[in-house]
Image (cartoon, rainbow, N blue to C red; front, side, top):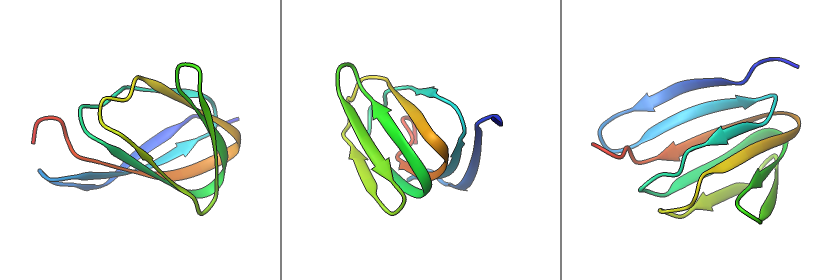
Length: 89
C-alpha cells in the first residue's frame, strides 16, 4: 500500500482546497473553522472519539468548527477534496 499524499489545489487567504490521496489510516488535526470533505474515489471511515461515519465516492461530509481530532481510515485507496478556511487568513 502506498503512502498518503496531500496536494494543495487552491490556496488563498479565504479558503484552501487540498486533494487527499489516502492509502492508509491518517490522523487529522481539529480546526477552528469548518471543513468539507468530498469523496472522489474509494471508501473510508471517518473516526471521531467514539463515532464513525462511512463515506463513499460521490458523498460530501461537513465537519463543524471545533470538532475534535479525527482519523481517516480507508477500506480501499481513496481520494477526496478537503476544503477549509485557514486559521490565520
